[in-house]
Every structure is written in C-alpha cells, then in structure tokens.
Image (cartoon, rainbow, N blue to C red; front, side, top):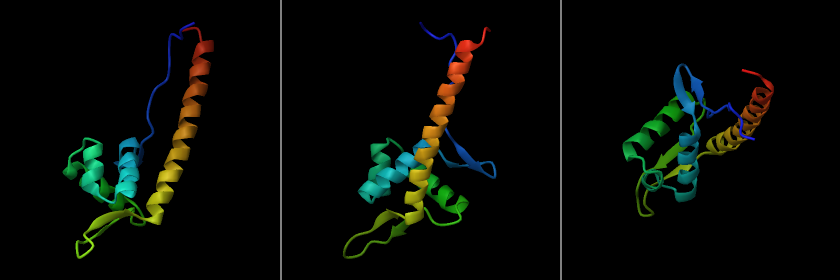
Length: 116
C-alpha cells in the first residue's frame, strides 16, 4: 500500500549562517581526492570551476583546519589535494547521512501510523 505522506530532505551543515557541508560539497571533495584536480572534478559534476572554487574556499574558511590544499605547477605540474582532515570530514559526513536517512525512515513509519 502506498503511504500518503513521506519525509524528504538532505543533510546540510551550516556555520554562522553559511553552508559548510552538503552532498554537493562532499561529492566535490571525493572527486578532487580521486582526480587531484578541481577542474576535472568540477567538469564531472557539471559545475563551473568558479562554483567549485567558491565551495572549496568557503569550506577552508569555515573549517578550523584546511580541507583542501593546492600545489602550484612546476616540473610535475600543479594539483589539488584533500587533506587528512578533509578525508575525515568526508567519512563523518557520510556517517551522518546514514543516521539522517534512518531518522527520515523512522519519521516515515510514524507518519504511517498517524491519521491525518
């Protein structure tokens, strides 16, 4: 039987009224970690480089430790690296998303019992 109501929503974490983490930012961090490039990651996400750079700059400014570090070009070329702290943020955010999804399921179940 189809449920008449359901709960939706995605997890977003704010600091000082500004978004620090959400699913887009985490996807960007994961792709930068894999590709070593903001440009490659932003293209795969169909996001402008400027938007990706805005997200990175914002995360680094809101974070107590750097999430991303850039390496300037040289004989080996430049690149971008997710820091250990950034990797920890990815893991912890993904764990929070699982808890958030479980909570939504629990509320959905409660709605099923309600008689609106």
